[in-house]
Image 1 (tube, rainbow, N blue to C red):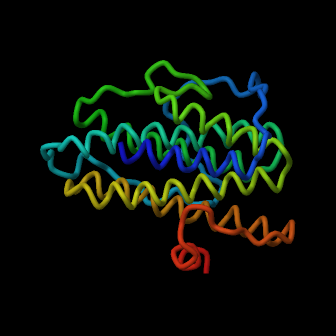
Image 2 (image 1 turned 180 degrees about the vertical axis):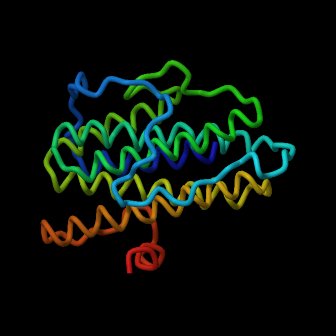
Length: 224
């Protein structure tokens, strides 16, 4: 499948960059579930809130069903990684953006509930995923981010790049107005988060981030 193939590309990229940094991590301080969370995002912008009930119910294509379920899990990936990295680094940006990612999860859950789909995250705690590839990506991202503050912030930027790339691909494959509204909102939030991570890298650590997933042109159009 196209989405799984892209995840594998990211995994290969992380293996190349990390070169042997995959280690076990202690996440006992971040136990939790995928329940709805607080709307605060500490000023990092989760995107405009979307009330899916204001949009008509439209028939879902197989691609649209896949998109909804996939993004529910991918937004959880972002939230869970950020919660772990907050505990490891103490950097408030991770705690603030994790709250924003919870609102992203809730937004996608709104679509799941509207169309009576089965939530793939039901009963799952921090760091638990249905997808084997998503599980492996989570573990690699946490391992890389655990190397230090700079690597943690780079992981945050990479996650937001992945989100933007995936959302762009899914938006090309949907014509449902409510899905487009929710995904557009998620993309706006991811752009805000990408700017926040890369700005902190530049201003506090003197590190200029190099995009790993987006083209240089796409990246510059977001952060400039």
